[in-house]
Length: 331
Ligand SMILES: Nc1ncnc2c1ncn2[C@@H]1O[C@H](COP(=O)(O)OP(=O)(O)OP(=O)(O)O)[C@@H](O)[C@H]1O
Ligand SMILES: [Mg+2]
Image (cartoon, rainbow, N blue to C red):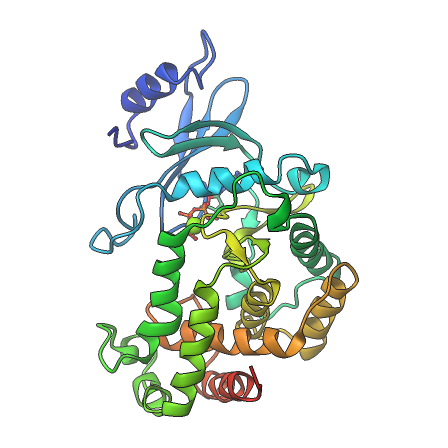
């Protein structure tokens, strides 16, 4: 298998062999287009255009000791293929230029040097309402228009779901998962103990986890958080559906809700997010809250930490709210 490198000759040879560089076209420069942990991603620039290439490998790019499904970039390509008949959804996502299934590399349209929305974890700003509207509408239309009965070959993405399941529903509750939370924020380890020891909470989390692993009837992006939302000159665009699968919509919107909470957004923004979604599609808000609770717990206590600015007191509050959300439900 070819391992791409940040090397002009390696990239040129590969892209020419794939015919992803046109005859006579050459690379003028290349660079990492933005923050990403999982994959090897580059922006390739030529005199006439730029495009993005992304390779998935059998490990997490930033943490090579952590294994990950080698072919995950193909699930990302499957997602874009699945939505390819839908003009609005394709407009909102990058066009795929090529898929190399042997080396797990895809080439796609460059949506421009926009920022993703992860800066909202850090700064105190409120996500503008027009942008929130676009984010929620994409999810609602995606869910409405992609039901499993119409799928050509339903994406199962078991391996990525298993990986996410471990990180979301198992590792945060292990007494020792290899992460000393005090290195994230002093005092966090002590705060975490209460939740790691909470048998009733863990039972609910376990059943939510089992539900996540069940197949559902709706195509989900699977990782619908600020890192997958790109702010471009043309408006919000959506990238990185490598965790996509057929599940239930409340999981997706629960995750989104959790991240709005972690971005310390006003309650009104979260209510608006649900309102914008519900203008287009149905939603069981109780189940959304349960999933949001599980995601907040996971992001504060688990291994996949975010660049959060909220202090210990706010994290303690969020953990309590998250626990209530998970517990206050008959599901
Ligand atoms: N089609 C695109 N157009 C413009 N920029 C892009 C595109 N795809 C990716 N990027 C940039 O590259 C960054 C990393 O891409 P992406 O999130 O797909 O990688 P990843 O390795 O899967 O990341 P993560 O670890 O968050 O899952 C994005 O945050 C974005 O800034
Ligand atoms: Mg990714």
